[in-house]
Image (cartoon, rainbow, N blue to C red):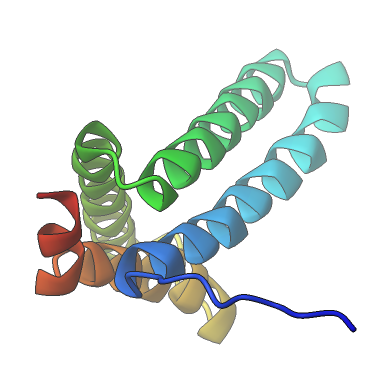
Length: 128
């Protein structure tokens, strides 16, 4: 007979780390998608590599958040606030940065949800 033991979880940090893994996957796809255009446009190569580094950093932070590391929580909050502020600034420009539900969800709602989960009281109590 197989028995499974339930582990005690803290809730918000685990959910935030899963959302960060999704966000890191989106960064990874964007970075890999930009690399072929680097053949023609050298700046796209740099942008693709920077996005791949951001993806790796996001996965690393997700691991730290899941392990309840304070430094990971702080850096994640900085990253998510920068994402939200950058998206809001881009929405003010007449370039059409938020043209539908997908960019709005991935660039605005997802980082705001991660920051909100990390700011909940249950995650702070778990780190003490």
